[in-house]
Amino acid sequence: MDPSPSWRCADIGRAAVLALYDELILAPKPGLVSLLDSGSHDDMDASTFYRSLFALRHYFSDMAALGQQRAPFCQLQTCGMAAEARMQAATAGINTHRGAIFMLGLLCAAAGACLPFRALTPATIRDQLQTLWGAALQARSQQTSSALPGGQAVRRYGLQGANQEAAQGFPTLFETAWPAWQAAVNLLSPHSAPITDQQLQTVGLHTFFSVMAVLDDSNLAHRGGLEGLHYARRCAAQYLHAGSAFTPDAVQRAQTLHHAFMQRRLSPGGAADTLSACYWLDRLQATAPGRARQRRPTGV
Picture (cartoon, rainbow, N blue to C red):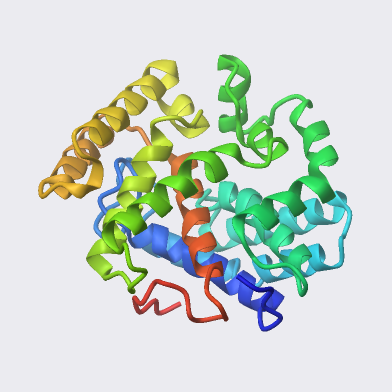
């Protein structure tokens, strides 16, 4: 793909908001909020996510602009903290998108750094992330984990959390999730024809379970300890082994796991963030803004 000067920071940011919406409406995702129900959460539902998305509508574009300016990491961090404050104000303190603010925010900054002379490919985005902010992210990953619940779980169980993932250039995203996404798309549409809504659900579910099978998801560890994390990983691996999302009963199997996760109060939020990043990467593979593979009305 040739570099695409038609892409702007605003387009990169809008793609991120739409990607978060795509993740929200995918169902069933075991334990997670969707338009159908609140999953394992008593304090939030789809309307909470809508309020959060509205509050974040400018944040991702701002991060892309900072990336285009090659801003130092401290400025990215300040922008992210301000976005988190807006999210909490919109949701009455409920954490809907803290992980996405961190992960997708960094990715938008890296995409902005590619403009206007580099193509917005996964490889160039990851390269810019590591080149420009890799040292700062590495230093951050070696600091004491956050006092937030997810950070406590990382420290308690010796997991590789979001900071460690970022310091390594998000290996789960680029080495597991995105290849799984591509494999699913190529299987369903080998001749690059536009995929249908039903096929996009299959792609999303396959990618989601591929991530959950390998990710050190601190949200799962916080809610269920190591036992909960390992249980979720085993469930994901079994789902993939049984044909993943490509069998006639794939949705029903995912729904059964959804109820099992709800009973255990498990919520794989880290996998959801990584899935959102895949939706975002897919949108950026268009030759121009607005021409990504997803043909679904979004309403955002």
